[in-house]
Image 1: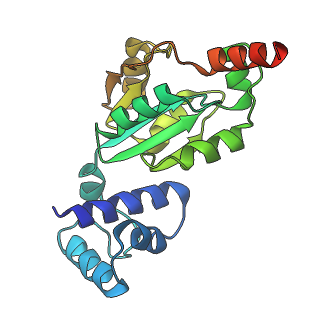
Image 2: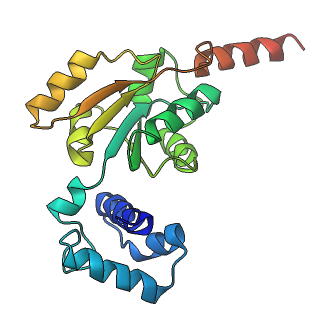
Length: 205
């Protein structure tokens, strides 16, 4: 499959999740003309990867993409986040990131996040390696997992989720997803540590 065709399928997948039209995103990602895009979509329809509506992926088309799901609070974006998300993107074709809701962030970090869930979503969406950022579900993380249906779930070095918990949860919703534990070259980096040190430096002025 050509790289541009993979990009078209990836853009359609993202827009299907969002319930949006995909043509503008395809144009932005591929830099192809309208005629070139339509020609490639014709080929992908012929190969049964895109439905005849020209907007949605067939099951074969969806299965041809390797979707990677990563999650976190992402209150202060630091080098550890960038490294981890780059490593997650290298595992597949599409990287979907889920940011924790404000309430979940408080439970996880024992403090109120500096940025709202919408602001954190916007921050993560602006990162070049991220194809799509969603706000998570408070009551059941596997609702989002089932919505995204990733083949790989990437866990950061500092995330408390256990691989077994994730694997078993995926089995319960009929999803066969692999769990990848990512390592950070800067294990001392964390949003909490940065916020603490920043606060101390302000008080020390």
